Image 1 (tube, rainbow, N blue to C red):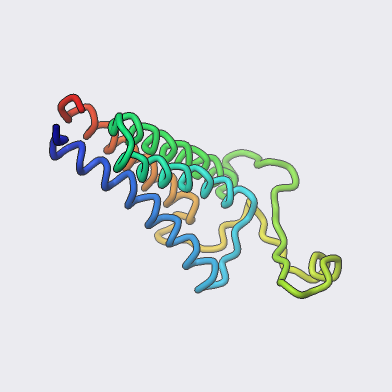
Image 2: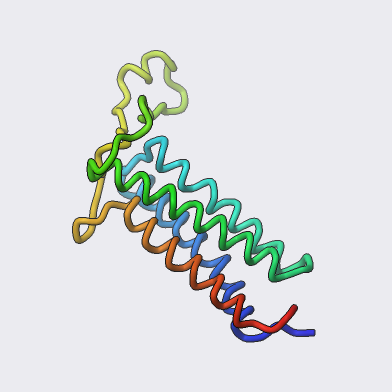
Length: 158
């Protein structure tokens, strides 16, 4: 039995959106030097899970379950992004000690820690139209996850 068009679209979105967001995160990191803080990494983990769930939906039944789990993982990343954006905008306090240092390969680890730039969670490294990367992740992830779940609810039983 083939799936309905809404389910197929939800499946493609469940794979494509987190893949694009992870790709964008790595492009900003390695292409533009915007190193992630600890909370930035927290936003990436659910996207990795969403990609895995979406890939499973292509091969392992029940397809709609895997797509729904991918959507929930995308939504989790959006929630973390919303919390992180609130910390960046000063709406609430973040996790104490939330920062990361960058350690280059082949260097003395202690020297690297002392010499490395500190990436703070409460300072947005970049924004577009006043919205930080965490804020964009919140908006894109939350809206797309809700869209995926809506499409699944419109699809016929798989």
